[in-house]
Length: 188
Image (cartoon, rainbow, N blue to C red; front, side, top):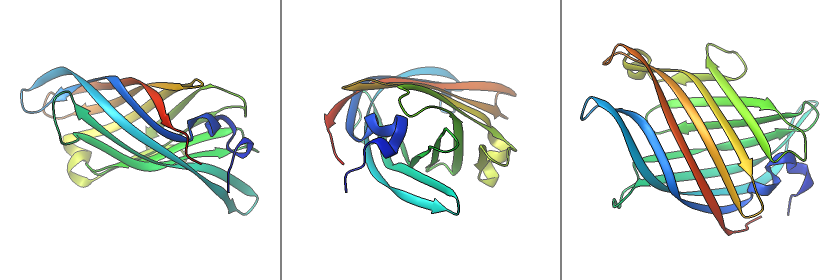
């Protein structure tokens, strides 16, 4: 089954993407300072739906992402999760987990034809929130997550900020990532 309009603003993301222009700015434990790390990434979005929660009907994208530092063969970051569209509520959602043991459910307002949208999550929120494993909850607690997405015809870009209360540096650290990816395959 091919989904199109049911995916609302997520429709343009269906397929496989690659980007070589990523920049990760984050605290590096190994050198005890903030580093700027160029990276490349691959993302695949596969459409699904409908998912019915009583009156709520969701359509979405199952996604997988991996990122590699320049010159390295093994990924330094991976994500699995879902992007969801609730047409009745005008809500785009992204729920994902990273292998460090952090889960994020972020959301924001959108309309079906939007090519740009912004999602947010805060620790302690009962709707769009963040959970961490016990170690990270004390050592490097994620307190806020934001992402802005721009979907073009053959590219999509994002800028995201993860706010972390870092015990080792005894201050709040803004971990940012950005990239522009190009479509390599239009899957359904």
